[in-house]
Length: 124
Image (cartoon, rainbow, N blue to C red; front, side):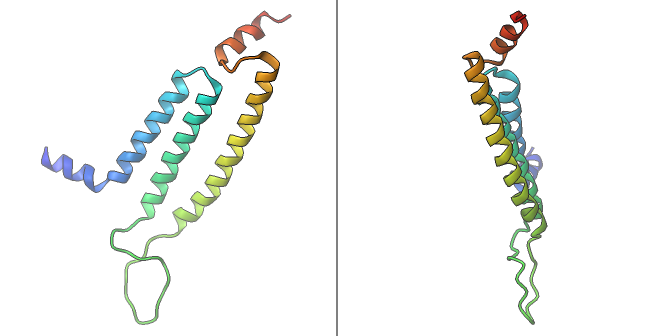
């Protein structure tokens, strides 16, 4: 039991990323409000970002700025650079989804996905 607790503590960033992903996935699946679905998607995005950035983290390492004559462990900058691109894409997708939600609200008068599907099925 102690060994399991130690392993979880060593991988605390992975554990937090998994918990965040599960919370976002649960929110995405169980809520019919479109705004809550977008929030759940953003929580899942944040979990993925945390996971990838934590992969590049090395305990006790420094930023990858090389100084002549100094031997040190460096943090891998590649995951961080990739996540910056991912953040830009996530913000763009969120903005696009919210603009579609505004148009859906103007057309149907509700943000409930089930209600919108019911209204669409009754239209000629």
